[in-house]
Image (tube, rainbow, N blue to C red):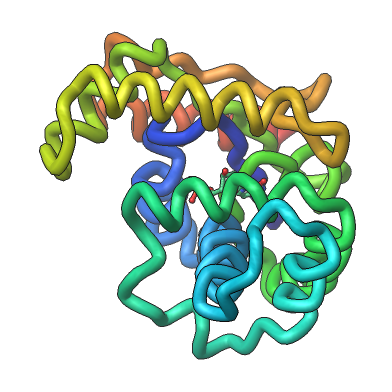
Length: 203
Ligand code: DC
C-alpha cells in the first residue's frame, strides 16, 4: 500500500504520516528532508541556492548520509530547501529515490507532490492542511526561537513559493481527501486520517 500525504509546511503531515506508518507497519519517508539536504549541500558549497545548475549538481551528488544530518531544520535550511525545490532538475534528480523507496514494500510518504507527481496512482491520498495562524502557532510552540509574527510571515512566504512554482506546485490531487486540522488536536487528526485511509483503501 502506498499512502501519499501532501500539504503546506507545519500542517502536521510528518506527525500524522509517522503514526500512520507505525499503525499500518509501513516504512515512512519524509521527502522534505531530501530537499532540505540538497539545500544544505548548496549552502555548504557556498553557492547560491537560487542558481539552478548549482542546485541540480548538489541534488545529483546527494548521499543517503546527508539525510541524517542534524542541521536540516531551522530558518536557513527552510529557505534553502524552498529555493532548491523550485528547480525542475533538482526534482527530477530526487524522483527515482522516492519511487524506489516505496516500490518493494509500500510506504507512507509525506511532501508536496507525492499524490500529484511521485505516486499519482497511490492507494491513498491525503491533503493535510490548517490555517496559517494555527500552523504558525504550532511551529512557534515547538521552537520559540523567533517571534510568532516572524514565524507566521516565514510560513506565508514558503506557502507562496511552494504553491507558485512552475515545477510540481503544491496543490491537492483531484482525488485526495482533504483533512483540515485547524480545530483538531494530534489525536483527533490521527483518528480522522485513519478513517480516511480505510475508506479510500476499500474503494
Ligand atoms: O516539508 P518540509 O517543510 O520539510 O519541506 C521543505 C521544503 O521542500 C519546502 O519548501 C517544500 C519542499 N518540498 C517539496 O517541494 N516537495 C516535497 N515532496 C517535499 C518538500
